Length: 138
Image (cartoon, rainbow, N blue to C red; front, side):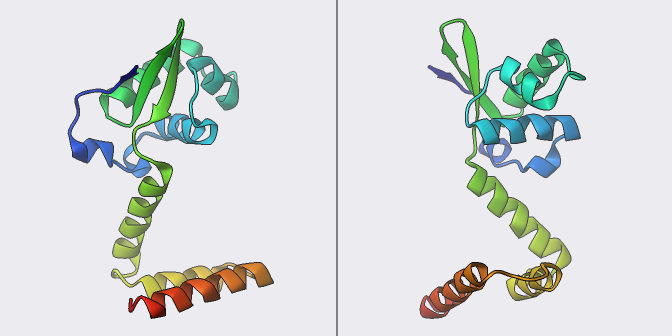
């Protein structure tokens, strides 16, 4: 059984940038593990964070609509409410809007300019994406 907090749909699409740094670390850990217990998260984040602090953050993140849990025996298994791809896309849209005046081409040019050398495989992937975008009329 998955327990979801009763938050609005807007809260469920909240980006990681809206969270406190430690909360963001917890959510990133949950994304990495796909599903995690408080003990697993504490182990991942290191000994400077107590188990009770991790549990308190998990409870806050559930109230904020970022995480949900299911009960497995005596364990609570936490997972993200919003798929990582959707959060990533939302963050990129915000970044492109804020720093590149909503120009995807300007953002891509800036990323390519700072990326250093790209492998042949990466260049092939970019060329394929450009060809697909042209074909779809973007």
